[in-house]
Length: 106
Image (cartoon, rainbow, N blue to C red; front, top):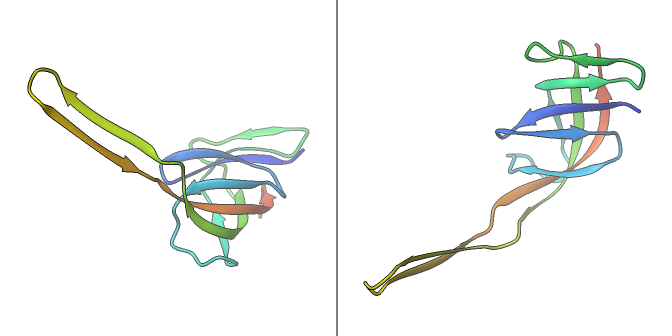
């Protein structure tokens, strides 16, 4: 099974062809193709190639499916005996991509 571990937006993700994953928000239109060159580890099913720090020539190609927001996180701040109470919410934006191809070498 071919897979790769790539880095984008300060996080690492495992990519396999045909799998849909949510990554931090990208500036790309839905339906467009994106390429991730920062591949940290790649496997062709028989051998595993580890990068130092990246695997040379390896890349992950994906198609942008949609943009959205994640589940709401509630933030509540409280200080006892002072009447201090604050609450807020946050929804982290994401981009959903479908992995099209994982290339190990050019």
